[in-house]
Length: 333
Image (cartoon, rainbow, N blue to C red; front, top):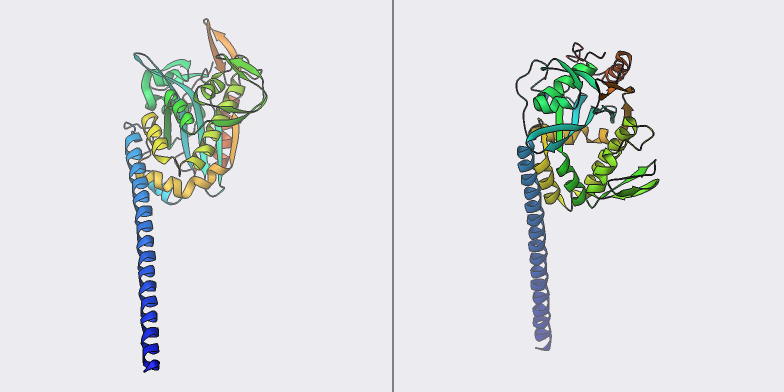
């Protein structure tokens, strides 16, 4: 009788323990499912936000004989591509001017990007207008299309994509990122800000001042171009770290200030196949000299210097030279 009661008690205890284990397992599984659901919801939200941002910034180019379209096979096959980046200084009651012009060649196989700055005062023919003027005036007269066609003709290089950034949005994006850090080579004061030599932290407004200053730089336009390259690289580095934790606000700022002819499917290919190339950036600059013509200051780049930069890009883009030869159209006096 005693033995039977003992067995029954043990069976009851074991049954209770099994019930507790089952409940604990169910709770753990439920918790895991909730966690997976939360992650899935976050990823869907992130995906959805990125998709909305990509749709918002997408601005295709008008049909043009000098702008190549339908480039998905190039991206799918991970061929080198060229991208023109320009910062637009919007003015009241007009279209504005391209304050910053940077031409990038991205080579996924080499995992390297080549970046060259084009000084805003560079004198060349504005394609579609037929006049000699500062290259940044192309945007004022003909928007994105005239800017791209003018740069293509000036350097005899085909441009696959463009990315334009409103400078005010550029300032706000840096603030959302919590500022950036750059390595300053020349001490100066500009817009009421002090920029000492060494590592300096910049908020949006200070970064804009840092990137725009040229008059107090011994290297003039070339020094300004190098600082612009610094700022863009610092933004890319900071964005990579901040996008996971602060993606919605960052993407909102990007959507409000960026335009590009990269559509969503192309963005996915670029992010997936070309991102490693952004880790290693080579820089170059167009060498020239200042000259006053009819009372207006211009930056004069010789045909030999344009040919040098053209040849460097062609050598860099060695794996994909098809359709990349364009007749020179930017006459320089």
